Length: 149
View 1 (tube, rainbow, N blue to C red):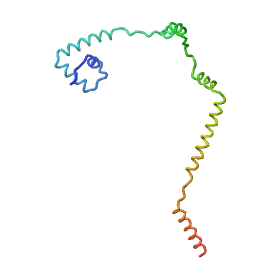
View 2: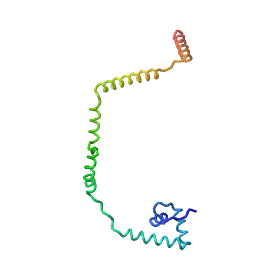
View 3: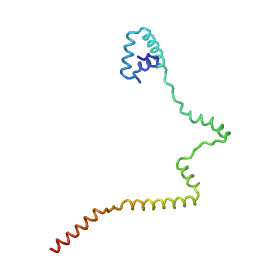
View 4: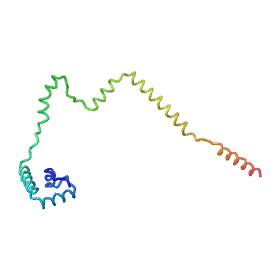
């Protein structure tokens, strides 16, 4: 059996993060071990004191205050804050491409599409084997014979 740690006792108090078997093991050990009950009572006292404390309020101006302090340091280091949206980034990328490269890319895409189309057309043609050709000839001869009769 695994020893019961303080973390296990904290999770046991809140009934969070432990499976049912582990919860049952801790309850069984608490019933028989006075030392474990004393540890659990101390943990419960500490957690009750912590839970009674008021919740800290989030600072609404924290992000702006941090940037006011960081921007001068970043400017000295030569780093600028990225304010461009994804549209601006895509536009800058397209503007940075040379027209010759775009023309070559278009020609390559067209050649690739033609090659794929040619290959697909060749693969989709039905294969004719000798047995089916002989059967077709035999059927034509039979049709001609029956028609003449």
